[in-house]
Length: 346
Ligand code: ATP
Image 1 (cartoon, rainbow, N blue to C red):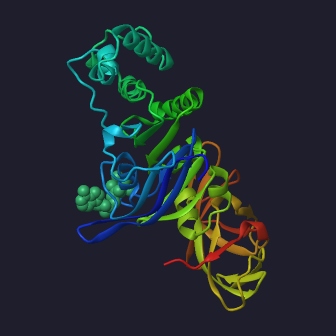
Image 2: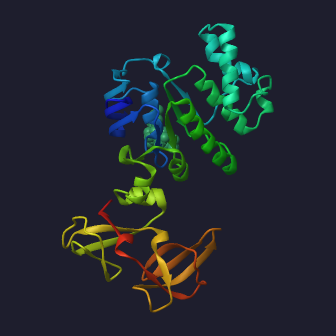
C-alpha cells in the first residue's frame, strides 16, 4: 500500500438490492497500467465510477495517495475520465477542445497555449489545432479526447473502453500508442475493457472480474500462463475445460483415460476442472495419440489452423501449425505440463 496511488478496501456496491461489486480489494501503484477485464456486466465500469467518485460504495473505503476520498466529489479528485463516447464539443476547434478545462480554471493564456501545444505534439496532431472536430477521423477524435483529459496533468486517468468505437486496425495502433504515451509521461492508467487481447497487450497488471468478484490479479504473462481457475483460463485464452477426477495427487482421469499431471495438491477422488490450452494439443497420426478423435472443422487462421476435434462426446478446440482434413481420425498428445488442474468451478 506504500506506493499505492489508488487503494480500494472491501468495496461492496448494490443496485436495487442486487450485489454488483462484492468485497473488491485493489491496489494500484503509481505509474502502473492496470486493466479491469471481464465480461459485460461483471462490474468493471462500476468499479471505475467508484474510483472516479461518480458512484458511492455501500461499504468499503477508497484511498487516493493514502487519503480517504469516499466523500470527495469527482471534480476535486486528481483524476480524469475518458469514455468510449468521447463527447467532444463540435462547435469548438481542436485547440479549444483541449484547452477547455484549463480555461475553466482561468489559467494564464500563454500557459494554456503552451500546454495545449505540448499535447498536440504528444499525440502527433501538431498542425490540427484549428481543425473542426467533424473534420477528424475517429482515431484523431479519440486522441483529442485523451489529450483533453491529460492536459491538466491528473495523477490518474480512468479509461472506460476508450477504443471500443474504433475499427480493429486503428484500435491496435492506438493500443501501442497509448501504452507508449502512458510510460512517456509517467501517469497511472486504470483501463476498462472486455477485450482479452487488448488487456494482454497494454497492461502491467490485469484484474480479471466476473459477477462483481475479482477472480485473479497479475501480470499478463501470469494471468495467461497460470490462471487460477477455469473462468480465467477460458476468458483469457479460449480453453478446453473438462470434468476430471484425481486418482492420485499426480494422476488425473478425464474422457475415460488416466493422465500424468503435475502435483498441485489435489487428493484422490477429488473432482476437478481440467484445463487444456488449444495450442498445447499436438496432432499425431491415428493410433499414436493417447486420445483419438475425428476432425469436425478446420479454419486457416494465418499462423495456425483452428480445428474442432471430437473425442468421445467432447469437442476439443485445437490450434496447430499441422492440419488434418475434416472427417479424418487423428491422435492427440499431451504432456503433464499441458494439463492444468483447477478447483471445480460452478
Ligand atoms: P459492460 O462491459 O457491459 O459495460 P461492466 O462490467 O462495466 O459491463 P457495470 O456497468 O459495472 O458492468 O454493471 C454491473 C452491473 O450493475 C450490471 O448488472 C448493470 O446492469 C448494473 N448497473 C450498473 N449501473 C447501474 C445503475 N445505475 N442502476 C442499476 N443497475 C446498474
